[in-house]
Image (cartoon, rainbow, N blue to C red):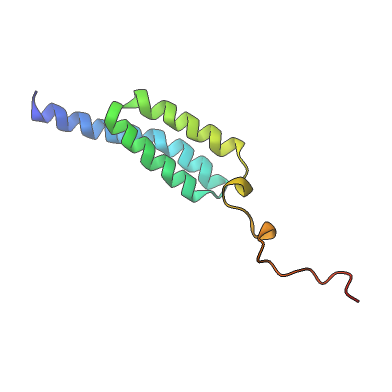
Length: 93
């Protein structure tokens, strides 16, 4: 096989994977879930290199659904539900 073809296929797969990964990345950024967005971008880019849009597209769709349907508190918690938060001073008069 021609090396130029292989290099072109790898670069094309990388680009299509990154483009697919941008969809869940921006969805996650909108919901302030940057870690999950970056994971989605990296995984989609890797999948694009392996099998192109045939794998990167469905992976991006699954990540997008997960990002939209899950709450932020399920994946990392919020400051209000932290067990180390100081107790309230209500009712101590």
